Length: 105
Length: 267
Image (cartoon, rainbow over all chains, first blue to last red; front, side, top):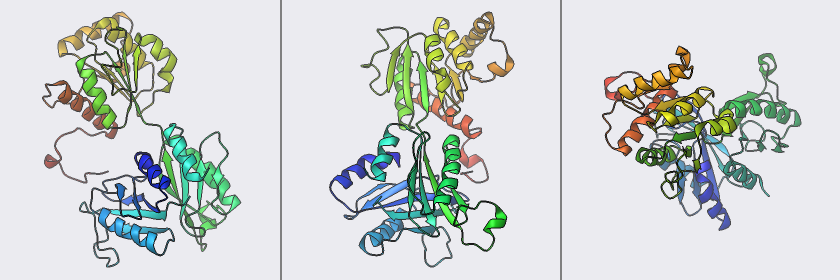
């Protein structure tokens, strides 16, 4: 999260609502290690990344849904290609577990 | 100050820190912030769980490892206690200080290497005994530029070097690179690279033998001539070849092209 701090500080100073997504676990092949993070603010601005670009779009959608509705922190999994709930997969075939939460701590 | 602000402050100050979050189970989203030597801040909602997690997170900080751990609701860790109970999954997000690269010799290759090392997230220290060359103006990308001989730097700060760190000796000057190699061998640094042709390397080995550095275990730690065989010519290309070698040594790979191999890319 180190590389996100400057932008996060800027957003917080402007009072933006922010959702934070962090990679907590990887199964098989995955491009980013646990701890990789991205953040989305209420305007849809995005910083950081959690994969090689495969799932970022879906994470932004999840994050905005969190900021605009159910703000309960939750685990999200990407990479089960046969799972209808999360049709977005990693091109490298791995499974990525993310934790998404509002940055209110 | 809120938890995030304290976390950000510590990460910026390179204080080893764990940001602990319940990601599954009761009190999902509750957080605890921990840095060794400081009172833990926040709570996961159960004092006994906090106690056990703090203990484990300190170990993870020590190992520099980010991971998910499983507990019973009151912090139980033995498998028998976890049967038929809902488990709490806890994400221990560890922030370690960046790795360090010491570069000896204030030459053109140094500027290029310092630049690439910064891209990779290193704290870069440039060191040369010659005051006219070791200047901030020549190495604005470095975090520190020191006018010093190798020995005092190693005796003062060598103990800070560990397996994630690197020492690159680019001087070609035995007055300087012999003590630099000696100093580096006296540390636990993970990578020691020394620049020079094969001829220079052979001569350097003689000089090292003269000062008593003959132990094979020591000499095999030296990556000399420095770098991967990329056919690099310019300082910038050489910097890539050095950093490529550092990564390959850390991961234990031979560094051929992925196309020519088999098996998973990420292990």
